[in-house]
Length: 284
Image (cartoon, rainbow, N blue to C red; front, side, top):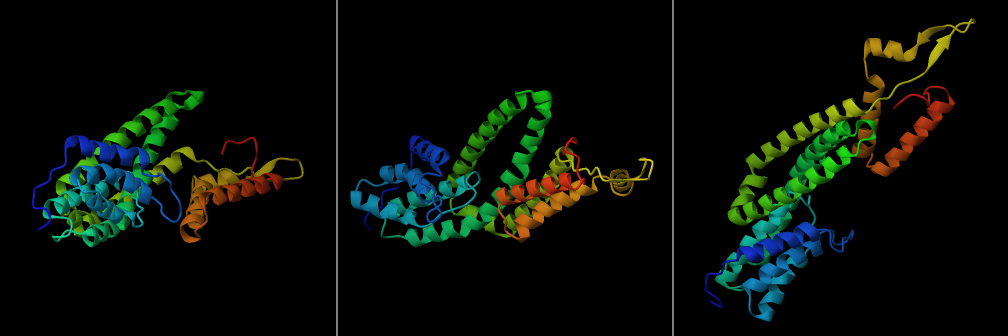
């Protein structure tokens, strides 16, 4: 065997690798490569410590030139797992064992999707709306406390959460695969997606309000039908719910980007004001 010496990564190198990912996971981001170069920067300290031979370092780094993209916060666990696998490959010899570039890339490719599903539901769909909801409540009356709260809390949770994921991935190694993509992983994804939907619904119901000013009047100018009052008596918040479902349908079913959806809402609001369905003096 080319190398049978047991290699162990130092804490300093692992910390350096994590910080490379934390600060640079979107390095040179493009539609062609996505997070590939960020992954390369995070694995560079690992490879440099494990291999003294420049040829072995070059061969090891080529493993991580394959396309990579996932949810970056929870995706940190994949970087930790591959750091553990690279350590195992260096210990057995880069060309002499069961852990090779195919094994590592197969594991990375297999985890990208499940981690993205869990991470998007947990981080984007649950954690961020909760923090934003609290921050919005603290921002009542134009107070800057909400913005300060969000910046501090999000960065602290992001840093220490990603750090925990990295070192947990390194600790578990390939054992983490069974947890993340097996039956247990599917149950976790389903539970988080359900919670995420509840959180988004709660935030939307709290902070989004859509009302109509449409009414019918008689000859004397007295209103005999106020549409908003009728809607509230049957289904309070109906227009708000319809607008939220419309946004979801446009983005989830029609694959329309959020920016285009916002432009559509601007057009709907403008037309609604012009025809008298919405009142520009109301708070939406």
